Image (cartoon, rainbow, N blue to C red; front, top):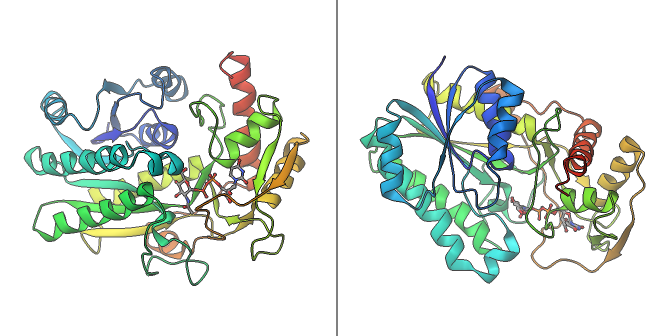
Length: 344
Ligand code: UD1
């Protein structure tokens, strides 16, 4: 068994897939999650896939004393992957203080405790949202950080700064900031996937819920953008591929291969796909017809963004591998499995 890794938000969508990949790479995993947007049975499903039950602690990362107790109880944690955060863009506009408190204080608590418990490194879940609408595409890590469009986006920018400032102050912390593009899909076993609370805000869960008949129609937000078919363009990255990027980042930190104490990587495919192209790819790869309509633009949407993932490809030796067809089929199989389990 390799080193102990703490995964906050480890029962969430990206977190759970990452726990599986970490375990399959031989790491011992401790999950901390407050279950605010996930379910404890995710731990059972992780065990079904890997044959290993990760340690699970139900805890909010805002609880400094609780975190301290967790580090005391599990001595020898070598690195943290910090997923735990609130992530709904719209909700963040309604409840900015909730977002600033949750997302900033959680990270601050972890950074404060890391040196006390000899935790060497942290991988932070950042987002392409930090670029806003980039001036040049595909966007590289050197692109300027634009003023955030939402409190959610702002927490990602501020958290990147918090990590940089903490490291610059001399803290013995090594960090990798991963800027995710649009994660989609589910585990090929259909035992893990995205399970939004209530009406989904993101494209794929809304799409698969429409395809299975939970929602009547998918609304495509705008067909008058400056793109070939008028709909927005995103870089849709398979969630298992994304999870694997975390394992590589952890290896890099623990093997002390970093060139700088804080490194940043785009995690995307390098390929932009429009919302309409994605819908057609879903229909073609699953054979399921989708009921959709074009409606007006959604406030705050970026017109087009896709990654230049060269740095991750070269420096991390990581590359997105799964085809969009396989990814969309995995999202659909997950939705079918939820129905089978009577969940949705
Ligand atoms: C945004 C953020 C991302 C963040 C995510 C979390 C950017 C560029 N991205 O992703 O960092 O992690 O929110 O929620 O800021 N769409 C429809 N109909 C729907 C839903 C979505 O047409 O019912 C369209 C949107 O207009 C957008 C695309 O699908 O063009 C993707 O939307 P979504 O899945 O919500 O993700 P982003 O807004 O790109």
